[in-house]
Image (cartoon, rainbow, N blue to C red):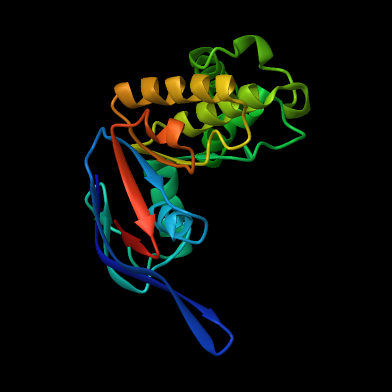
Length: 219
């Protein structure tokens, strides 16, 4: 599903250049449930952003579901993100002025799906995460765990091949974290590849494989 070889990433800071990823080799198979761990500044978030086609890289190869991801136009990058990837963030990234159902339906709006159809599908996905009774609530009326469930439903609605979750339990208590990870495990069991960036050992322990990043390299 994901094949990365000899991946390098540099950030220019004035006259200097910071070598963030120093030759990453990584293969994640279709249907795997993996976590990526590393200290702050290790390069794990940069790696996730590259996998999510949110950031470019300088050297090496990256193929996603058989497609080479390199020097894509903004339109092409957006196309592959919408077609292949679902994102879950620590801060949920919900639109404050839209209710739960409208937030879940957003990816379908960008795909040009009509309002009544996307609202119907959004309700189905809210049902899957156990929140159909909160469909008309704004994010400000939801708990942290409920917001993350809405975010998971939104990530799933476009039926991605890969879910990229960046610290999905980072702002949740331990009980709610466990519930969110159980939900992600169910998502994975439906055949979707799930990649979780986390600094929490308890969260990583629930995945099938732990990938550790240190100083821009896998260890």
